[in-house]
Length: 340
Figure 1 (cartoon, one colour):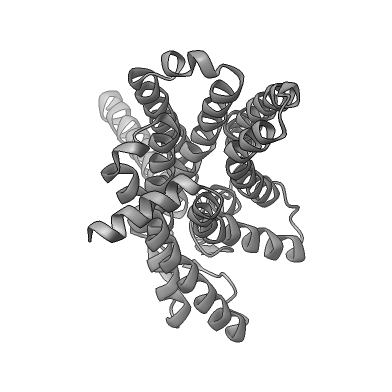
Figure 2 (tube, rainbow, N blue to C red):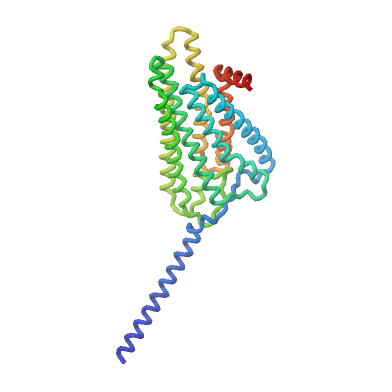
């Protein structure tokens, strides 16, 4: 009798424990489906300026023109720098890297954005958003480092002209370019993983034209202190530190140029650096403005326009700036036209 009562008590206890475990599992499963495990099946809606259709058509025209001119100009610089032996110098090696980078950068964002301007449903798949986020952030980070490397190249050319060939040897140029690409893609990998792991609780409306880290962080339904700290550190390392190195390089360049006695020599040295300095001002100015805008609606719209500017306008202007001010490129283009 006592044994039967004990067995019944144990059965009741196990039944209660099993029920509670099932309830706990249901809660965990519910939280997982609500927050993260099934997020890879989610689609995102890119809001952009969908509430202003007339502005969409204007932006479509501007971006299409900029994209086509960027493709043409950057491709021309790559082809000329590769085919003309007189341009096989460190400066044009880095310029070719910059042009190839700009081609990939605009292509990673441009076609889908142009398509979305015409679509009623402005969606992007989870995998598409992840790829867009990783590739565009990697290329943008790489450009930040590459522009600093190009500033060092100009510093070596102006301040140490007699030792320039030894300082900027082929192996050194290759290593500096490789460091730019590897560091840019490594930073993007960290930022992309941290951002996509955030639970969004069903939120899928991105207030931007494309998938970007700050816009995706705003969708999170948990504390994002870690992500914001990582983004801040990345901004310091890939925007502010390279910009500081560029400024220091140009301070030394300015001192060296002022020491040149002849006016023609100073003009030549200035023209050597002017194109790069203009590109740096355009890229870093708009990038810093885009990543530092407040959260008000007008500021968000301004930030989105700034993002379009450094994504399409600067990549279109880069080849124009370098070719319009560079007689060597003019001659190389002329020789290429005659050959063909």
